Image (cartoon, rainbow, N blue to C red; front, side, top):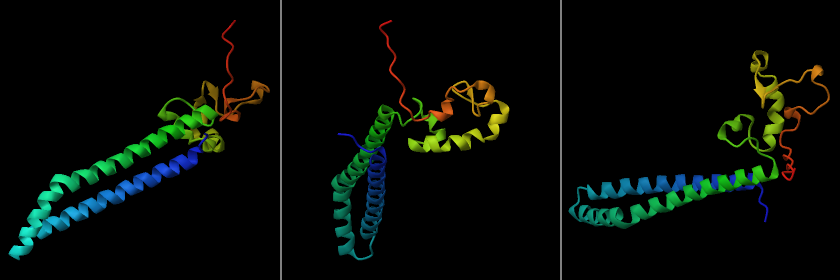
Length: 158
């Protein structure tokens, strides 16, 4: 089964939003229960104290566990998206610093912006090659023209 990295990232973002909403709900409920435990009416204060004891002991930690699970699931989906991109040749580099060009197909579209970057005038390079190839470099493909293309397998039997 092949998954689209964009869809995986969208699902990861939805999981993070759900975790954020659950965390906000958890916080609001905590404040409400604490307010009930400090109420002026004795019966309300006693009910609030019982609710607070149960909330602290079971519900509050459980909601925190669920929110943490949503966030860790989002991180796993992000990792899977990166692996899919690397396997398909759509992601550059093996470290987070390569994100400077963007992810997947965005990297290919941003090469022109990077080439026009003022660093070009100061000798900035991609993989040891100048960002803007000169006519003296000949007709060989420049790395900026091959971004996102799968790296060929090397024959190691020689």
